[in-house]
Image (cartoon, rainbow, N blue to C red):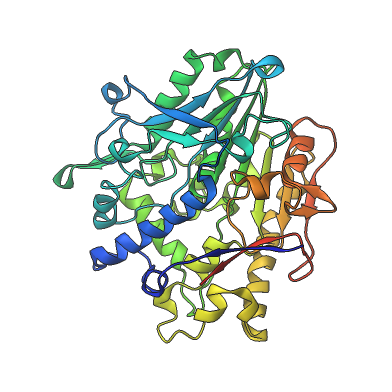
Amino acid sequence: MKRVLIWVLSLWSIVGIGWSRSEDGLQELKAKDRLLSFLEKDAVSPGANSLMIPLTLIQGAASKGAVCLDGTPPGYHLDRGFGSGSNSWLIQLEGGGWCNTVRSCVFRKTTRRGSSKFMEKRLNFTGILSNKAEENPDFYNWNRVKLRYCDGASFAGEGQNEANQLYFRGQRIWSAAMEELMAKGMQNAEQALLSGCSAGGLASILHCDEFKDLFPSTTKVKCLSDAGVFLDATNVAGGHTLRDMYRGVVTLQGVQKNLPNTCTSQMDPTSCFFPRNLIANIQTPLFLLNAAYDAWQVQESLIPSSADPHGFWRDCKMDHSHCNSSQMLFLQDFRNQMLSVINGFSMSNQNGLFINSCFAHCQSERQDTWYANDSPRIGNKAIAASVGDWFFDRTATKAIDCPYPCDNTCHNLIFK
């Protein structure tokens, strides 16, 4: 049975969610932050038997310049493995959008996405981070880490803006965190998985080979990107919203120097922030988990409020069942673009895929979508089972769903 999650938001919050440009007002930045906060709360709100893991700040990070946007130290949450998983490590890179202008980065400093002063002191570990075999069958007893995201450039920036006291140090945060975790036992890992969701999913692609290089060749290392296949798609007005956003991120935060030369030697730096131009050159086994109609990209890239000033797309944007035939064709074209992006990638035997035809975003961190009785499936196999089969080489996993509306196992997201 299809399960529908309804996010109740005020209308002005949805309508005012457009991209952060220099002329944007404070209210728009606050609305965008509230939406991100709401989505995160929905995914990891604690229950009766929650596993709440404390925040650890990286004390030596500041001396290396590895700091959040506001200069505070970065942090992570670590739950130690046990039994057969004692020498296995899973690193989950937190997501949470990007900041592409001085104004949006200055605002971000006042939130947990730009300062450890505002990070939760404890986080609920669910889905791929759960410590229960019945919720996370293959990774429950591993050392599981959530690396907090406070730089706004998918752990890839390098620079600063002295006038506005902004530190763009995502790459240094990545390096400092890996150094600390290696010292805490990850150097002895027999197997390791780097994962991430959304902006963290992009980061897991960007850092995948770097992660592999931390370990000896005898260590089994793979990477998982959840909701990280961001497309350079055309919005409903003919513009390229996400490309414009990425151009600001890459330029402002000095990302270019940390992008792979295999890409930047052939195309512009902004293009090299898109997974399409990265995944072909990644040497480490990589699994792409993505909803074909990614809910965040539908909301923010395809139908931003700036591209739909008269609200023609508003009902469709909030609830896909309200899309007319021409609107649905537009969304089907987005799915076709995603399948085109992963076509060559899927030819490699070492890579894995789970592309379900759902209106969803970030399915590895939510318990209901990762592994539950009614979780999404392709060919009667849940996401957790598919990722596990791929990681442990039990069977090849190249699962691509039929087009909407054929899948009745989706946990689609509806905005009201």
